[in-house]
View 1: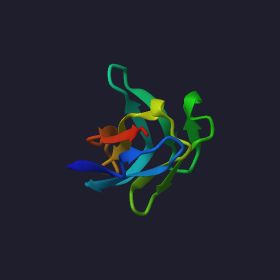
View 2: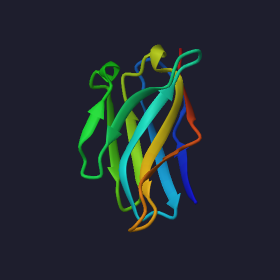
View 3: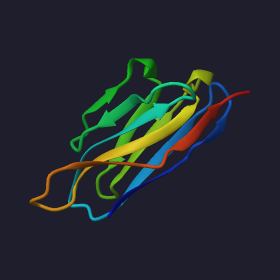
Amino acid sequence: QVQLVESGGGLVQPGGSLRLSCATSGSVFTINTMGWYRQAPGKERELVAWISRGGATNYANFVEGRFTISRDNAANTVYLQMSSLRPEDTADYYCYAVVVISRDAISKTYWGQGTQVIVSS
């Protein structure tokens, strides 16, 4: 069983920063892409950023250089450093990981439970 556990969400003032973490545990042979989505109230879930095992990254247009995704392959953990936060960044943030559980297995995407980020004064 593979589990993703997120941490780091909370309430922050506009212009502030937060760092989200997502640790993967369980039966893991290797993890390919890891990333973050978010879902604001009343809106659809949208991609924030992803990072490959080799460190290639991709960001949504709305990030505009304010967020940085990184990962620690040894710890099976992905991070999202968010700066210059805006009220419109308020959402539940979900991490995901494309996991291979054994040498002969195919990959499968697993999701965290979500962590709430509220940007408000």
